Structures are given as structure tokens and as C-alpha cells.
Length: 402
Image (cartoon, rainbow, N blue to C red; front, side, top):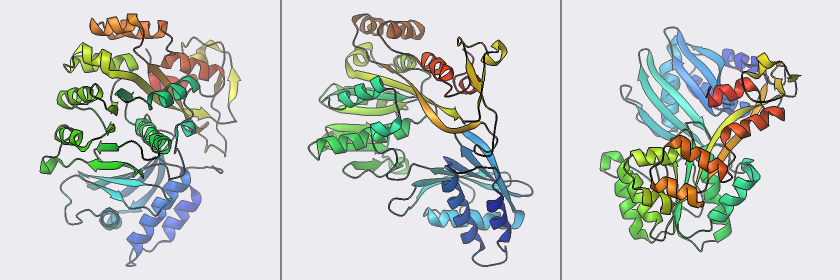
């Protein structure tokens, strides 16, 4: 990425040059906003209505940054233009709507979410990696042992691989990389199917389906019917309820490889939360191939400075660290790009398997996993700090204080 200063002076100048009274104003402004979001490498573009107009913000490397403002009278037309691009109802402004903005081949995939607020509809545009980026596991920069274990397990004929983490942790990117890995390695010899809510990125060679709650096509009912489609690999976009979880695990024990995502704070936390949802321990023990918990942290820019001051280490067990400084290259933030912190729990050890069957608490499960060889998120984070890849403050921001 070139020199970055936010808000971008050129973007603000181009925005100001647009004439609100022109019929093409909304089209030109939306094109400009989408182009700027792509150029900045933003994961999201926020258009939030205020009492004075429409505020533009970018989420770059996981943090919201200012983008500019549009005058009050043009907000509705700009939002309407986005609706047209996403094939949404332009006359409905009182209900949430979601849609996909069709991209040219090779361009960035985008999804639009609209939500009514006090001053009008707020729009959030999620930008996904363009085709050609993050295609395969090798491109994700996962720890080597996790990457190789994932690649090996994708060849399994049954069992569940669960990707966990909070929103924005890269789970979707990882699961699509796994899908592309399967497409490339199987060359059409395995029947690959997905059940998503919504479909975020089309993947050639995969039968992708999107749930439709209004029609009664839910994750649970869809998964039940999908099992009659002779699938060998099933991707369930996200496990959200006990019924879907139980069906996914039953499928994993009956000759299907299941990949799914789940919200939990750690790999061991996935076991605990699924157990709390009523999933039987034997299903968790026998059906789980691996659980990957991941986070994304910002990488330090080259302008970072080294420190050994204990105050700057923020209580983390590290001997040295680097701190963000800020320069023209990073837009004064001190960070450029992000990296993955990940841990993988593989319930192969007898002690860990026995603990799962005994419904052992999450804290002890985590300790047993580490004893069995798992490198946890905190250990990865400490290593990244000592290598000068990220800062103590960034680790605290993402992983918290415990």
C-alpha cells in the first residue's frame, strides 16, 4: 500500500468536486466511495446518517478511521444508489435489508447491509478479498503446523473442522480458503456443498446454497435436505443453535466431512459452549477433527521503535517489544496490515478425549490441550510481540486483559 493519510486529501477533493444538483451525483459519489474503499484495503465502509449529513468511515486493519462527510440533502439518494447496485427495494426505508453488490470478474466482492436509524438508513459495505487473493491455505500465513494439519484433515472422509473466533477474526476467509483447497486437490472427485447465511463469495466447483428464513429454508431444514444430495463435504456457514449443531455433528459421524464456524473465545471454549448447548460429549469427542481459534492483530509499521520499559509491556510476559510511532506510510497509526494469531485443538490425546467425555471445565480443557502440544493464542501473541511484529497495546486490544 502506498502512503496513507486519513482522511485522504485527494478523496475529499474529488468528493467536494461533485455537484449535488447533477442527476449523476449519487452514481458518481458511490463509485468514488467504493473505489476509495478498495484502494485503502478497507474491510468495511460505513455511511452513517447524522443530523448534519452522511458521515463516511473506513474500517482498516480492524479499526474505524474517518473518511469524510456528505451534505444533508444527498444522503437518501446515495443510499438509494447503493440499493440499486445490490438489487434491494429502494422504496423500503423502514426495515433492515441485505444484498450483494455484483462485482466484475476478478474484482472485490461486496455485501451491503442497511439499517434504519434516527436520521435515516445507515449503510455498511463489507469488502471481501478479490479473486486472486487469499485463494488457498498457503496465502493465509497461518502458523506452519496449523496449516499442514488443516491440509491433512481436509483429506478426511468424516469428522468436523470448526473455525472459531469473534466477528472480524478472519473465520470466513479461512473457511473459503479451505473450500478452494478442496476444489483444487480433489479435481471434482468429491461432492462439495455449502449452506450459508448469506453466500459471501462464489467458489467455482462448489454447490453453494443460501438460507431463506421467510420461506422456511433455515440452516437446520437445509442441512437435513442437503444430506440427501449425496454430499461428501459440507460447509455450514455458522452453527447458531442446538438443532443445527447436533445435525452437523451427526453428519460428521456418518461419512461426511463438515466445516463450520462458531463464536467462542478459544478452541477449548468451543467444546464448552457446544456442551452447554446440549451436544452430547460422545459427539464432540468422536465427531471433532480439529478446532481452530483465530484472531487478527495489526502489524507494526517499519517506523516502530523498540522498548524494554516494563510500563510499555502492559503486564505481558515478554522481555522486549516495539511500539507504534506513526509516519506517512501508515497514516500516522503506526500499523500496516494484519496478521493471524491462531491456536488449534486436536482431540487426539487420551487425556483430552477423556476430559471432553467427562464434561471438564473449559479452563482445564485448555491446559490439557497445551500439555498435548497446542500453542495457545497468548503464546502466539507473546512471540509476535518479541519478534517486533505487533505491539503489547494491540494484543491487549484484541485479546483483552486475561
